[in-house]
Image 1 (cartoon, rainbow, N blue to C red):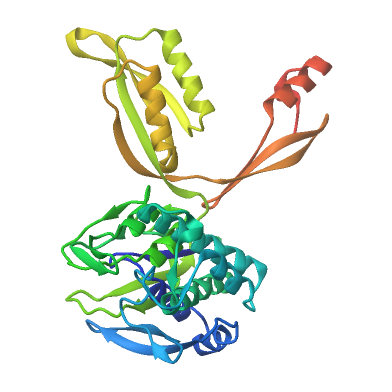
Image 2 (image 1 turned 180 degrees about the horizontal axis):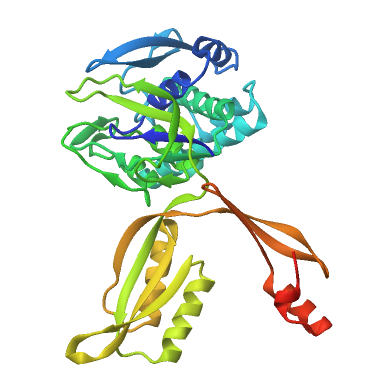
Length: 389
C-alpha cells in the first residue's frame, strides 16, 4: 500500500509540509512551475535549498504581492488589517484556481477547519471571521500546494506521528497567548500531541488543519519500505533541526492503531455482561471478549476487554461505565495488523455461494459464507463437508 508518513517531531506548518512533499516529487522544479500556474492571486512560489543542523532540505518561499513571507505571517492572520477577507472570499479564490475539483474540495475542507477553529476561539460566527489579505494568500498558497501535491503523489493513506506543539507563548494581534494557540488546540482535538522543551509555537493552525484533513492515523512509524524522503525546512532556528520529514513508501495492508479497554467485574450477572457486550458491538467495537479471573476475597470474576478504534474510545468508555459496575477502565494502545477483506463468489459442486476473500502479508484465503453452505446442506440432506469448492 502506497503510504506517506509525516514525522511531526518539530510540529507542522503549511509551508514546511509543502516543501517536504515537493522533495518527494521526481521533478520538484517542474511541480513549482505548475504551482505558479494555478492562479493563486498575487502569489509566487520559489524553492530554496537550506541546511539545518547538517541536514539538507527545501524551504518554500511564498512571495505575496512582491514581499516574501516571514515566520509569523501565516500563523495568526485574522483581524486588524486594512485589507481582509472573509470565508466566502476564500471560497471564491479557491474555486477560481486552475486545479481539479478534488483539489478544490480538499482545499475548501482544510480552510473550513481553520475558519471553524477561529470562530470557536473568538466566539463569533464563521461568516464574520476576517483574515489578513497577505496572510490569507500565504495560507491559500500553502493549502492549495499541499492539496495539489497529495493529488500528484496519490498515496493510499497518510499517517502522521504524534504532534509536537511546542511550549511557551505566542504573540498575535490579540496579545500573548499560550502554546498551542486556541485555534490550533481546537483543530488538534482528539489527535495525540505533546509539548517539549522548545519555547516556541511549532504547530500552526494551517499545519494542524492539513494534518487533520489528510492523516487517517497518528502513530509511530509503521513497518515501511521507504522509497523517498523529503525535508521541509521551517523559518525559525533552534538547536534541533527545524523541519518536517515526510517519507513515501510501501506498507502492508491493514495496519492501524487501536485501543484495548479493560475492566474487572465481580458483581455482575452473566445476562448483564452479555448485554453490555451487545451494546459495545452495536456501537462499533472491533472485538469484545471475556476471560475468567480470580479477584479479591477469592471471588471469581470476569475480565472484560473491548477493542476499538482510537476515534471510538470515548464512546466505548461511556458505554462501559453506563452498563457495567466497574469503577475504572484501563487502556492499552496497540498496533493492529489485518488482512484486506473483500466480498467475492465461490463455485461449489452445488452451485455458486458468497465468500470472503482475505489477503495481504504474503497470505491469501477464501472462506464461503456458512449460512449459504448450511442452506445447501439442508436442501440436499448432506453433511456440510460434502460441499466441495
